[in-house]
Image 1 (cartoon, rainbow, N blue to C red):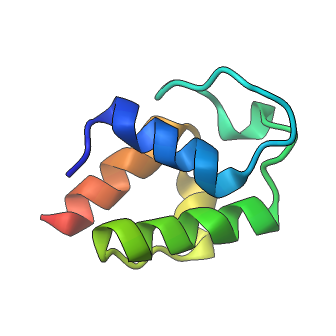
Image 2 (tube, rainbow, N blue to C red):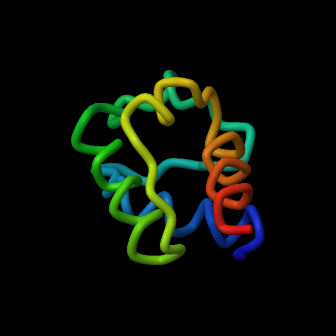
Image 3 (cartoon, rainbow, N blue to C red):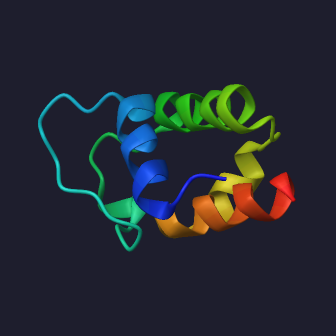
Length: 78
């Protein structure tokens, strides 16, 4: 499993931000202008393709930060 920093980099690519944005594990998803259903789909695809983990929209609704998503992926990866 990637470190949190590596995951944040991949998250940034998956969400495809229009403008440069500083992200960290503590970044609140709700604070991101680009965090919408398309961004969530990108993260679901990231989890599947990079880590072989299935995430749902409900999983992402429960996550508050990028670190929460990383922890969820890590817990399911085993």
